[in-house]
Length: 112
Image 1 (cartoon, rainbow, N blue to C red):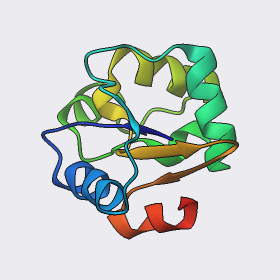
Image 2: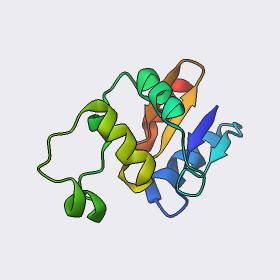
Image 3: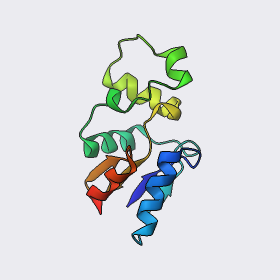
Image 4: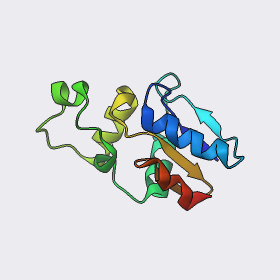
């Protein structure tokens, strides 16, 4: 199991806490520090069964400054999230061929 984690995010910390309380030690990917590849992000989206625009954090300053109101393709959103990882919703937990967004953190229970 992997968690794409931002330690500064309360929901991300709460999701990780649920996992550890259940005895699960996931691989922690600090995606703000270690850039996710385009291939990896595409795989995550397929496992989530959502489009790239569905996991964009529209409240982020970078979104408001650079992307608000723009029409973008799936590929353009993916490239934007790679360049500006804060745009990506968090946390994302992946287990095998399934994934969930930990908002609310209890969503992770679907993978346990």
